[in-house]
Amino acid sequence: MDSIVVRGNGPLNGHIPIAGAKNACLTLMPATLLTDQPLTLTNAPRLSDIRTMSELLESLGAEVAGLQGGQVLALSSHNLTSHRADYDIVRKMRASILVLGPMLARDGHATVSLPGGCAIGARPVDLHLRALEALGAELDLRDGYVHAKAPGGLKGARFEFPIVSVGATENALMAATLAKGTTILENAAREPEIVDLAHCLQRMGAQITGEGTSTITIEGVNSLGGATHPVVTDRIELGTYMLAPAIAGGTVECLGGRLDLVQAFVNKLEQAGVEVEQTARGLKVTRHVDRLRAVDVTTEPFPGFPTDLQAQFMAAMCTAGGVSVLDEKIFENRFMHAPELMRMGAKIEVQGGTAHVTGVEKLRGAPVMATDLRASVSLILAGLAAEGETTVARVYHLDRGYERVEEKLGACGAMIERVYGK
Ligand SMILES: CC(=O)N[C@H]1[C@@H](OP(=O)(O)OP(=O)(O)OC[C@H]2O[C@@H](n3ccc(=O)[nH]c3=O)[C@H](O)[C@@H]2O)O[C@H](CO)[C@@H](O)[C@@H]1O
Ligand SMILES: C=C(OP(=O)(O)O)C(=O)O
Image (cartoon, rainbow, N blue to C red; front, side):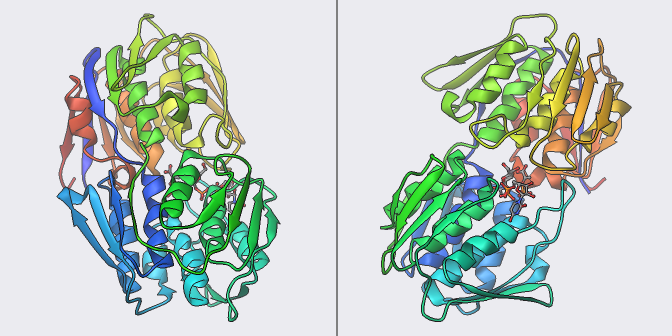
């Protein structure tokens, strides 16, 4: 298994191109199942999760071609041969559940393995299922699979999500595009990835209003057509690389970055003493202060501070002046990076969903291991400013969500390399 070796090497300077969003692409790809016409996604990220989604769609009979080195995905579902998403693929990636709504809406039946829990929490899919039931789906849970039917087609309905769920909103939104009549989704997720999905579906002919607000209204249509759609910028990759100069010092311009994608996060960075400037090309980030200031953070659904940046922000707080309190409100077990950061000399106390981080002057390199995607990258960020060498093992988690991390940071002066097969 590959590892990443990082050596603290002073300030970083340069620019980093930000890719299309993993979490948008993973919901845009299943949208192909809604139509027999071609769907082309541009600005796609080159990640193992995207390959897993391709594998899943291909197992259903969809065609997926990666063009221009994988940055363009040409998808076609004109000849679906299966409506069963197998456990063997679904277990690798929770976003697999997003094929359920589209298949059910177009063909009236689908069988999808239940994804199971994962390192960061139990992550049930009950809200996906309740929303589809509200649209008239008949569901039977047996043998670890959801067997779903809608013999007369789905029917528009009003559904209020009891808590905000990104994935459940996406599944319901896709399904409702082909349901008969009007669907109103209340307390819907407002993430940029939802807006991006709605824009793609609109290009395919869907009638959707209210995307980006907590009430989305969908007028069902009889069929959807093809489209070409650019995947929105990855705000989590963006925030991650914005933290690199915040932690190591220097100035890094994140190309393609937009303030509206990361405003809550930027507010916290600025409070910590980092300057963020919107330029014509992206977001330019500079740390002027010698030492960051401790800042408290609570994770929330968009437009709040994203849970997917909590681990990386914690890495920054490890060497800040003062005590910062990080409250994780989205997932019940998302502090697995804390004990690893402590192996590097960080002072962190975790109690339930709250972590108290007391900044130390300096972290020290150590061999560390990550159990999820954002935890992995937080250890790399910490390593950028640590004394000595940090080796991050099990980087297959990292490869789910970051393309060419060593090249992107290396181009700004970081001493970072991938060691193959260790
Ligand atoms: C592929 C993708 O886009 N992943 C993102 C998506 O995950 P995902 O869509 O899985 O996250 P959700 O927004 O659904 O989860 C939010 C909370 O709702 C709970 N819940 C969710 C669904 C459900 O049926 N029942 C239920 O109880 C979850 O356990 C969690 O506590 O949004 C998360 C929250 O921003 C991000 O961290 C993930 O990176
Ligand atoms: C938690 C994440 O992804 P997933 O929902 O695919 O597990 C993430 O992107 O940080």
